[in-house]
Image 1 (cartoon, rainbow, N blue to C red):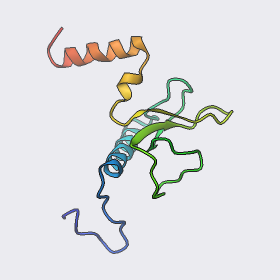
Image 2 (cartoon, one colour; image 1 turned 180 degrees about the vertical axis):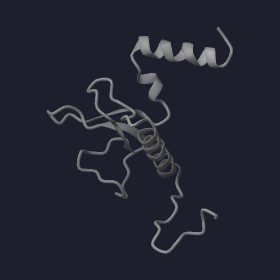
Image 3 (spheres, one colour; image 1 turned 90 degrees about the vertical axis):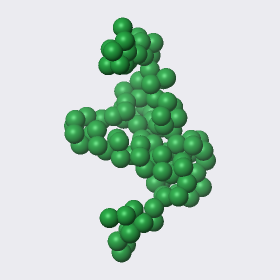
Length: 116
């Protein structure tokens, strides 16, 4: 089946890069959650799950809203005080890890690539 062969009632395929990146991020998140039965990614500050959405959107933004404010980011709803925030651009989440965790990630990548 070709992606252009939509079934009746299917939403149209996205045709802009930010929307495609958001769809891929959503799919990656859903796959990890389904396979591992855990929330991913997690905001390091609030210890809750995040969701992809356009940068700079407000708390009342909803999926499918047409006036995207910016490139897709991992967004955290925040704590009970309602302080939601953008955590990182989609694709740059590792850069937001605390130093110790970021170094451990780099070490595991080097080992995987056969470097020490």
